[in-house]
Length: 266
Image 1 (cartoon, one colour):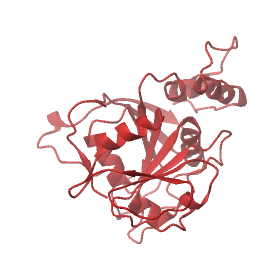
Image 2 (cartoon, one colour; image 1 turned 90 degrees about the horizontal axis):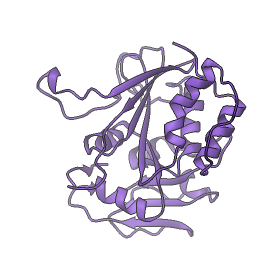
Image 3 (cartoon, helix red, strand yellow; image 1 turned 30 degrees about the vertical axis):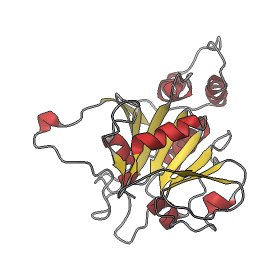
């Protein structure tokens, strides 16, 4: 398995693709650079409607944190750089309120060259405090998806969407599309990603596996069980060596429009 080589010329080409450039530079790519283009090229290519990508980092035994909630060092340095590249290629990055409350993430691009995407948090009950870092940093758009009226800092946009116990996943994607977002990254946590997956909304799922064993703690993705292996989801998958992590790039068949059959429970 060849290492992915995101060289300066590869990354410049990918950022140009995101901005609408046509064609490929007349250069000879190394094998590692070709691997990088195969991995990131589909995410930077022109988007007709919306493209939704989810990324999760986990251990060999499928955990995303310890029982105490320590998740800071799950991904190795190249795995973290990969996540920041995904942010740089996205128009908006989405997290659930549990992740926002526990991790207080910045959701900015720091380990790759590029602009930080808009930050979106799914917070149906208005639990996220206004001092959260993703709301305080004014360098990009900040959006809270909620089902109640909650005062937010100046400049923070709110999407008020109805719910019974949950917010409909399809309605949220439609609302984000109306705001002009075309490339959407679902970054966490595992429950939020799983609900996007079960809603049939994901184009790609990236699972970065780090070489460590935790033994217990939250599972990576917890989806509705299937009675037989024949009914299990088996996406077309490619494997990439990031260096510190092995990446599973899973291609899925989303249905963005149509029946609103799944909802967010966060």
